[in-house]
Image (cartoon, rainbow, N blue to C red; front, side):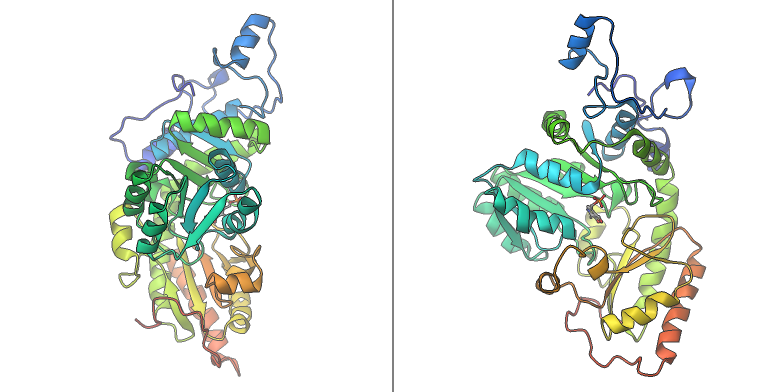
Length: 422
Ligand code: PLP
């Protein structure tokens, strides 16, 4: 990766400055102040020798946009600045990035250790696709660090982590598990989508490869899909080679939207996580709520670890409603300032039950085995005024409580950690 023409803000500037200036070209073509959207599929050469040198990577330049693209390259450099990585590779979606990484670093006869709680699509790769390729997959109880250490010590090629987890917001002790993985020479991969590079930099904690769904907080507006992988150039060269052949490259227009979104990430997240803390604290007092998951709550079991590895607790809250799905179906339509949709990280607040969002790919039996209760609702807190979001949620609960038969008759059996009112 040629970094010379891209701006690297000095190391002492804050993240709010870094998201704006990081990775932008020192001078964009035409003296444009914004990265141009280059939609060309191929790049032409009159000099055959020069063309050949570029194709071999001996000279900087572009050949074909499945391999590399000028707009996508700006995004990749921006991510390097945010994750303080040597190199980055962008993909068409977060899942393309995750499957790209797992296919790059795992082969038949090898072993991956991970946690049971990870995004539903990632879980599908572990349960369905990797075993078909002859990769041995061991999924441990996410919060049982000793079990994870025992399984890692048996020998593995890749340790795959996600923290905070989607949608139950469990916190994994990155430093401790990295130490266990290093003892057996395993590569450590971490999904940093929920934390964002502002709240957590896994590479600084010893992780080798960071993945993001750029569809979420990075793009921030629910209007682009993408994924990014970051790490040392020696590793990213392998990931880039896989992408070139697999073909799940990011298109220039999506790259532009994600670049534009990232510039406001610090501003957005500040507002979003202040509201998330407020909503989480309110939900703890709500009689219809059985449990609340938010690492910013002092009683959250991962709070202490989160304080050691995160700079903020993020903008996702989840809660289990008493009465399960019937209560979910009553509550969500009452919300005025919310999408009911399967996405997160956008400027608008988004509510969704796990069974139609993070774990839509899983069967009810699989969700039950994963401890994903049917009454679990995930809130991706938007940038609206905190007071308005709180009032909206309060009026929705008040409505449900006022309805005949709304009282929780069957408390949800899949109990989470934080008791309502605690
Ligand atoms: N990782 C996490 C934590 C996610 O929440 C998601 C999607 O929700 C993904 C990865 C997959 O990203 P995408 O939908 O961009 O493929």
